Image (cartoon, rainbow, N blue to C red; front, side):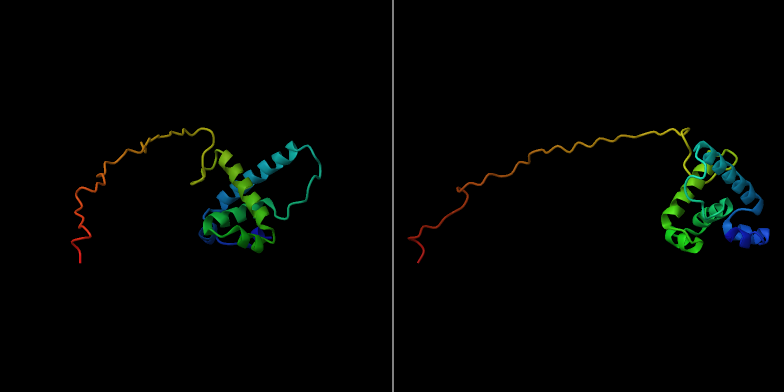
Length: 150
């Protein structure tokens, strides 16, 4: 429903609104649709679960809106008529599909298993050491005798 409204925008306005060209959007949406269909085949269950409320294009459009505008998942859920948890699951699903696809490179999305992680270890010695303090003696203190005080 949302994609049907915005697909008639001019390419310059579409890019301005969502951050990608309409041709790139179509390629990415086809990849998401293809991967979603493959996931359904792997489950080996026909008609299992609830039908999705959003089409693949709307799911991808919602993810682009999330990336572009930094809106909360609650606000996106209200706009698209779904719950906040469904928005979260949808965004994660689309991110995983596009990060595995080698055709597109998403900035800010962590790479898979191919990254090298190097750790730097710094040790701090925090043991206690005694501090020399002067002894308290009564010798240096001059005490007046009670007899002298009147």
